[in-house]
Length: 322
Image (tube, rainbow, N blue to C red; front, side, top):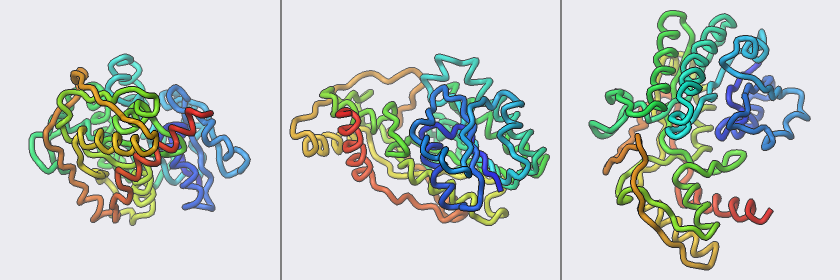
């Protein structure tokens, strides 16, 4: 059996691939990544194991997909994308081609190869500004930025492929990620706060900091993906699942980082308030309901935010010293 992971050099993928090898010891694990934002150096050691194929290629090129999809490919985890609001705004053409057309090509090839499971990683950005609470999978889909629009388009392509071609697709919608995978991604709010504290910079809080968000540890996301692959096919085929964590305001996160920083760094950590970025959602409440994921695959977040922040401080201090 072969399992294909697109974007395997990225933040989620680089932690997911080694875990796949442990959970499916008889499988060959193939990664396809154009390495624009990802990097295989964090999982370079896997090349010593013949079960892993770490390929450089692009999901928008059919020839690259054909190389990555071995005849015995049974599962696909689709993580490759131009990620985030900022990067999509800076490179709109690339975002549309990669996130939409690339997903279309991959789905076509998955059907041709009779793939049994297809997991699409999507985002809570597809909901836009919350119109009702809690935010379930039935919440209106009204993305307000290009990133959310491309993710919703990818979801609709996957759903259409399930309905018309019978491909067993499952979409996972993720809120704000943090924590350690094979490495830390510093652009998201929690790791950004930690990196600022370690580098003697004030924590930059947008707006008044009272806006609430849902924060999920990357390792909990990886757990959810594994649970999807192992769940009975009929339980997840055609499903869309919110994968949530813990709801906290940005001010609450900043306070935890300040307290942890004072302990780890033995000095005061300051804060400064700035304006929201264009296309960024402000909401005073964000109840992200992951009840369906709990029912369908047994998902529950296992890692607390304070624990994740402490791990990030240890990692950042080590990285700065090297």
